[in-house]
Length: 392
Image 1 (tube, rainbow, N blue to C red):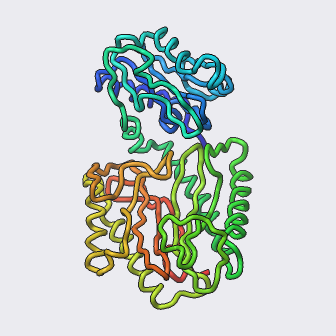
Image 2 (image 1 turned 120 degrees about the horizontal axis):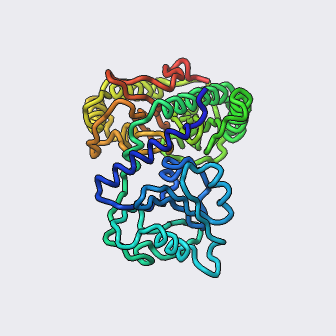
């Protein structure tokens, strides 16, 4: 059972990135994105006020630049050629001064240097100079989006990790539905379901399992009763009552890779109005499934769903696009949106989640994770979608 990206695949990603640098006429590169650092090197860390980055020198060596407290960690797990560290932030000597010295040592001066961001950024109190203020180069070239686009199409190994995520999200959701009862609070229900699913997961997968994110979980995220009409509500510890419309979410991270499973459920019963909007949502998702094919733009999928909503006369009840790519992040580009014309290709993994939101009644949204194939899609999530199966 695959539970990690093998070392050789990180090396392959780096070689592909070197090719992107050649296309951009870059001699070297600096990357600060946490997700992209992990994607290129396998080094997973918690970003703080202390700057961390990866840089590629003109000889195509891969370097990690980290605080001293991460040095041994980076050496243990980073698939890189060199690890450099600095004492602490802010320190007597600022980390960017140490970075300047290392960049000069490895030949960055007077070269064309690619970057994803012109400096390290953090909301945890970090203050420091941008890279263009510390070193003189021939030219800086933006690489924003380059590694993200490399992540659009998933490898076989990535797909297997996402499938594993789906399995444990499915169990967590099964337990969530089992424990969903009128009179119980959302935190009580979700905590019990998430903990039991997580325990089953770690006992089954063993010590080789590394989440690099969240273990198995199932949540309502505050989308309970009328509050479920807010597409991105937040947990409020609501007590469930008979007849409530519920919008759920369940997943797990496996070596950083995640999936998305969401369902509309009803506590004990669903009235005719709830059934009607459930059916609209269900049919909209079916329209999206049928529309997804390689070779067409992402926008074409959204156009099909919007056409259905318009014909049903419920466009005013919709408020977001039909779905998004998913992998190392819960939301990744490209998107099933009218403004995204990215070509759909085999190997892309998307969520499919057209939603309807009725004030005072609730939200109606299923989300399934699908893999684009040569012919259409393969459903990776497999929880029941019909109404009767979703009455608790």
